[in-house]
Each structure stands twice: as structure tokens, then as C-alpha cells.
Amino acid sequence: MGKVIVVTSGKGGVGKTTSTAAIGAALAQRNEKVVVVDFDVGLRNLDLVMGAERRVVYDLINVIQGEAKLSQALIRDKRLQTLFLLAASQTRDKDKLTPEGVEHVIANLRKAFDWVICDSPAGIERGATLAMRHADAAIVVTNPEVSSVRDSDRIIGLLDSKTLKAEQGEPMEKHLLLNRYDPTRAATGEMLNVEDVLEILSIPLLGVIPESMDVLRASNIGLPVTLIANGGPTSKAYFDAARRLSGEAVPMTIPSEKLGFFGKIFGRKAA
Amino acid sequence: MTEVLTDTQPIRLKGRSFLALTLSPEPPFDLWLQRFDDLVTRSAGFFLQRPVVLDVAGSEIGREDLRGLIDQLGSRDVRILGIEGAPASLLGPDMPPAMTGGLPASDCGAPEGAPEGTVIEADAGDGEAPGEALPSLMVTEPVRSGQALVSEGDITVVGQVASGAEVIAGGSIHIYGTLRGRALAGARGDTRARIFCRKFQAELVAIASLYMTSEDFEPGLHGQAVQLRLENDTIRAENLG
Image (tube, rainbow over all chains, first blue to last red):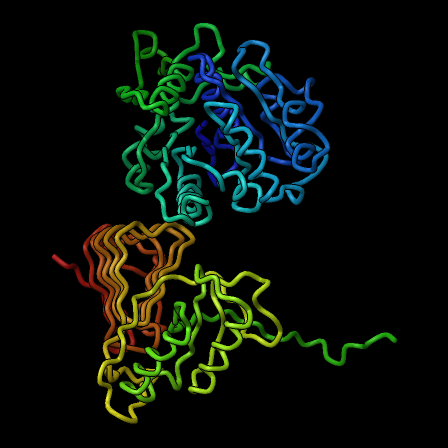
């Protein structure tokens, strides 16, 4: 039986889809059977980031409405044999997501995969609440800035009230993924630092992912960050996060400014 | 036939929060009713003016039994405000409405030995101590953004109150942590209510409906352990050492 993870945040644009693809690919590279599911109906992006946008025939809504079988809708990644994608619909909207439909799909995915990673849409409405409903654990993606932190706090409150686990009185495993961390700006106080965010959100830290140019380049070519050959610190940080998610004790590396010789002259940070 | 609106003035719809006593009947229901009668004789008048909600979650009660129970309670002068935890098939237009979204509040203790003819004052508006202690709410987890804690009595939070969260108490508020959200004490008019917190970073505080927002606070109080109380219609803040 697989584990269902929801990648959520409340705030939009913080890196949920990027992180879903990166962590999904990292787990698949350890030979685990992984499916990443896009819950952002009408504004789907996971298929783009996974490089599968030209192979989507059937989607989650087709499966819920009985127009296609789950096996017809699952798209296998061309680079990793054990990584699959269940895309969202682009032409319909979240009203087509039904609680019974989602329950049925998740139950079937759980039987076939080790990890079911649900990419939640932004917000606190139906799409987000249905994405989190059947989760065993949650990754709360947060940027180190005030509005993202407050929205993440709100979504943590919803994880403790609107999920099946909450209704059954069981605690939901929550992990903080601090994304787009820029150590220089944290040092000058423009961005919140790791301790500030942890103090406000009070959930265990899964990883700190540094800001990087790699991410935009990768999503433009449909490559999850952890599939970049000789990936840099961002890719490594995602691999470490995936290992921690699997239960390994990996020491936490907080990205720091590294001013080498040139850095001191030109004032730019490495990585 | 087209209907013409006689008046374009909108009807005012407001949301209000009330604390209701919840009864959870257990089968066999005739035995439960006997125990209930026992409680009523020991505490005459306790239920007379109280809004009562029936919680039937998990009791698998049938429609006929529920109707019978409501009638039986009605003949004992207990008026049911609503039913919680009932599937939609159980309720109908002749039954009290379904209630959802109930928040746990402190359990109301059974009124043992209340003297005959005591009517418990539902509104303690003048701040005078009522005939029985008000229930107090103790929360040991952080209060997350968007959540609201409501109690008629005191509220104690062992943890922090996030920005965008609200704590609304009829009595005093004690926060053993950082207050980043809103705290409204003495919400039913008790001017003696106070607010205490370990780290003061509140967005808004109010005591007995007199409020102050963060821009009106003295800057020296930010991040300090603080006590807030009402004095001559102004909120005074003091460092708690």
C-alpha cells in the first residue's frame, strides 16, 4: 500500500509543482514506484514541468467521470521507468472534481504505487481541500516571506481540520519545505531566515531549497530539477528532501553565502 | 405573473456565535430519558432557558426514534435548537435543523443540587459574577491563521496565536506564547477581563468591545511579555516583568 503525500502551500507560485516533479523524480530514481497527480483543474502545469504536455490524452477528470480507465490516463515518464503522471484537465474546472471520484482514484493509485504525490492548486477552495483530503502526509511549501508564511499557516490549519485524518482524530504528518531561499537576502533581513519561519509555523523542516536559475531553465524544457545531469545545490537539496521523506536521517544544509575570491571583488554569491 | 420587489432595501443578515449545551442521547433511549428526568428533578429550571443541541453522531438512531425523542424532550420543556451529526435522510421539515461546524468548548458540568427555581442568567452583561462558574477553554496547540477560539469564560492557549487567528473570550485570555493575531477579552461586556501574553505582537486587542489596533500600541511593548486591562475606558498595557 502506497503513501499519499499532498504538496500544498496556500499561496500561489511558491514552487509546489516544481517540488512535486523534483521530489517525485528523486524518489523514482531510487526505484520506487511514483505517480504525481495534478489537482489544478483548468490551470494544469505539472504536465509541462514533467515534459509530458504533448502526450496527455486522458486526464483525472476523464477518469472521475468514467470516460477513461486509470490505466489509459497514466502517462509513463520517458526517462524514468517507475515514474508516472496523472494530468489534470485543462478545458474543465474544479467543479468537476467530486469527493467520491477523488476517493476512488486515490484508492486505486495507492494499490499500484509506493508514492502518490498530489500537486495541490493554490488557495483554500475545493481543489486544494480535495487534494489534501486523503493524504497521509503533507509537504507545505513556503517561501521565506511574510505573505507566504501566513498562507502556509492557514493551510496547516486546514490540514488539521479538513482531511480524513483530522476527522478520524489522527495527527497528520507535516513537513516544511522552505523554497527559493536566498541566503544573501536573508542576511540583510529582506527575507525571513529559517529560524523565523520555523518559529511561526512550528512544523518539522524537510529541506531548504536555494533560489536558482536552474529551475526556470528546467521547467522550460520539461525536465524535473532532479533529472538535470550534474545538478547543482538546488537539485541536491531536493534529493536530500526526498531521502528525509523516506525516513533517512540526512543532516540539514542551510544554503549560505559563499564569497570566493571573485565574489569578494564583484559581490556576487556562488550558486 | 411577475413579482415586483416592493422595497430595494437589503435584509440584514449577520453571523452570530452562541455557546449551546449539547446532549448526546445513547440507546436504549427510554433508559437515557429516565436518567435525563433524574437530572432534571435534581436541577429544576436548568434546561428551561438554554439552547440545546442534540448530538446524534455515531448513535445510529432511526427517524422514528429521533422524532419520538424530540417530542419527549419537548414535553419536558426542553426545546431543541438543532441536531448535530445526523445524516440528511434523518431530518425533515418537521424536525429541528441540522447543525454543522460545532467547535468543542469546555464540557458543561451537570448542575448538581441547584436550588429549586434557580434560573441561570444567560446574559451576564453587567459584569456581576453569575450563579455558576463559566466554562474555560484550554488549548495546547498553536492556533493557526484563520482559526477562531470562542468561549464564554477564560481561554488559555499553551502555544502561539498566529497572524490572522482570533481568540474571543467572555472572560480573560492567557497566552503562553506569542500573540500575533487578535485577542478579544470580556466579549460579553466584562470590563474586568484582561489579556496576558508572553510575546506581544498582536494585530488587534479588545476588552469589553473597546479595541486597539497594532498601530496604536506603544512601540516599546512589541515582543514583550504584556498584560492588558481596561482602565477608565482605555486599554492600558503593562510589562509583565
